[in-house]
Length: 164
Image 1 (cartoon, rainbow, N blue to C red):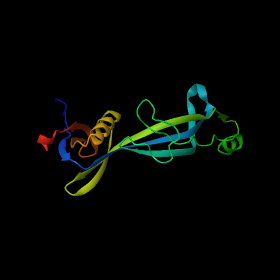
Image 2 (cartoon, helix red, strand yellow; image 1 turned 90 degrees about the vertical axis):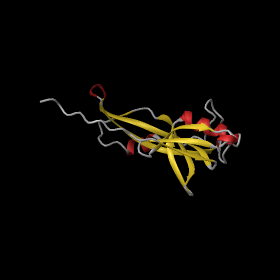
Image 3 (cartoon, rainbow, N blue to C red; image 1 turned 120 degrees about the vertical axis):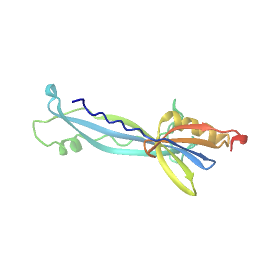
Image 4 (tube, rainbow, N blue to C red; image 1 turned 30 degrees about the vertical axis):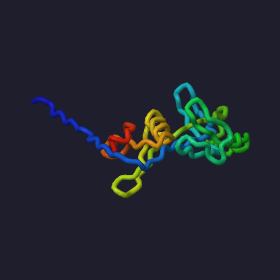
């Protein structure tokens, strides 16, 4: 008997809008590795203090300390580095080895847009975010391609005045 193969296609839809915002939320946080046996990869991670900042349409946000960086993003102040006392408090076993604190940077990209009179926000990629930032600065409407069963913006296409 031949195996049954099931293929699922994700439908994409398009939305044309003049009302949109390109959002990049940037995060700094300290992370420490705790290892019982690093050779066997028996490790866990603890997250310590964090800071975040919302970039909207590429403009400098209040609270920005550095930037724009090579991706046009503004960043907040660094969170305080964890102290040895704080790191020891998180040890689950005395023989657990505490690693060196690592500063982690993360960025979440989103597009907020109007769809049938309602505002929606969906995640997107850096490339889509940048295209939306540039179009917004020029006051150009966008055609958004929504993928993954309406779960993310996979593409944006700037439209000319005659397209809208």
